[in-house]
Image (cartoon, rainbow, N blue to C red; front, side, top):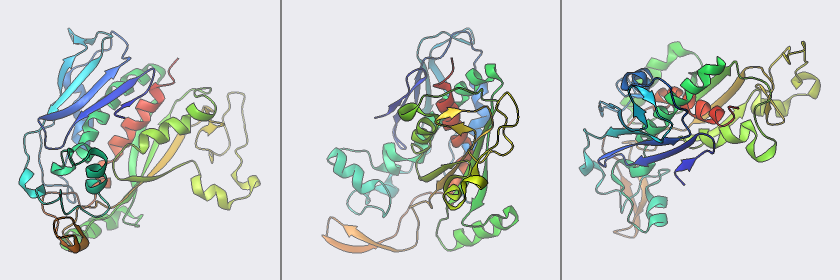
Length: 325
């Protein structure tokens, strides 16, 4: 479904080439100072424009439709709307019958019986993350009461961990009409110990649910993650060194038994290469009932991972907002 959460409930709506898209947030406490300007910093980080991102330019101006009065939240559902202004839907007219490999084109058509809006990926587009980022801005304001800070950064691009090599790698990828993925690390500091519920509402479960809602995310780990499977317990354990739960190491990524332990929460997510590439690909064409060459048109990111850090922060903030006392 398109709704997540209990205490802080987020419902996203809209399509990439429709009239607009956005989010409805229920559970926002009254009295939080909030204006359109509060969204700009995070929206700017998600916006395209850098080398390797889509040439599609959208203003992404938030309209606060409900839940705001005299510059403060009212406690009623908060609705944030973004209007689409720069669409070129003709670039996608052939994808209904000749779907992109590893994209949602084909599965969306099967699920919705062909009634889905396929333009620009429709509701499956990365553009829908605008709603997540907006909800993250509000969630960060809620978490600020507890002095919780969240930050994300790209730590690997196309298998390369040296940032000095990234620009050349992106240039080569663009020249080759291809795409690359990346790994984002997201950290939350100041989270009190004791947040979370065992098993199905563990902090990892909730955060993973949200991280995987970000289009193109295919993997996640907390703390040492998969590396922990290669270590001995004597190497991976985090000794507690003080009465407040501080640990000598943080291999667990700030979470034990699904409950926060007061140390920094550390998560990493893997973002796959953008499926929309102009390299000729062989894929099924329903009109001819045969495998044929597809060359994707339109405006797409050579590395969508460049724009994901702020979306990851939003996911972390929305998840932690579920546990606020």
